[in-house]
Image (cartoon, rainbow, N blue to C red; front, side, top):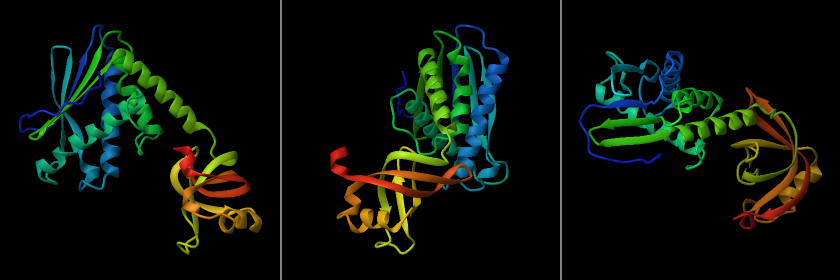
Length: 265
C-alpha cells in the first residue's frame, strides 16, 4: 500500500476519494473527513506562491458514486481565472497530502509545512478507514498529464493517527525556556553578514533563528576561538524566546564543546 503511480489519463482534472469500506461509515465521520480535506486544501493554496487569487479557490463535490463511497472533487474559482490554472492546484495539493501521509506512516521525509492544524486534519481525514478493519482509502488526482494514486489501508490509517498524535504532543511541548545541551550549527555569522548571527537547532526548529550570547566570553569562545565555523556543531544551553509560538531568539547561556559536522554523518 502507499504506492504512487503515474499513468496517462483523461483531460479533466479532479480528485477522487474512494473509501472501500467493509462496515457502514458514520455520517459524522465521513462529513468531518471531507471538511478536513477541504480546510487543508484552502490553507495549502492560500500559502502557495504558485497560484493566483488563492483565497477564492475551493474544493467542490462533483459527484458521489455508489460502489464503496466514491467522491469526485474538483477545484473551482468562478469567474476569477481560467479552469486549467486552478484545476492544477488539485495535483499540487494531492502531492502535499501524499507527502504528509507517507511521513506519518514512516515511508517518507518530514514535510516542511507539517503543522498542528494539518496533523489534526489528517487524523480526521483517515478516520473512516482507521475505524473499519480491512477498509482502504484510495486517492486519485488526475489531469491530462497523468494520475497520482495513493492507497492507505486500515492498519496504515491507525499508524498515521498514532504518529500524528505524537507529533501534536511534541508541538504542544513548551518552546519558551531553557533547553540544555542541544546541538546548534551556524547559518549566518556577523563576519558574513552584518545583520548578525543566525543558527539552527533542529531539536527545536528547522528554521534559522537569531542568536544572542549571554556574555562576551561565550561569544569569543564560539566565534573567535573556533576555526571553520560552518563545519562545526556546538553543544550549548540555550534560552528560547518566541513570537506567535515560533522561536524568535536563541540566547546561548553556556557553551560546552564543538564537534565536526562530518562526525554526525
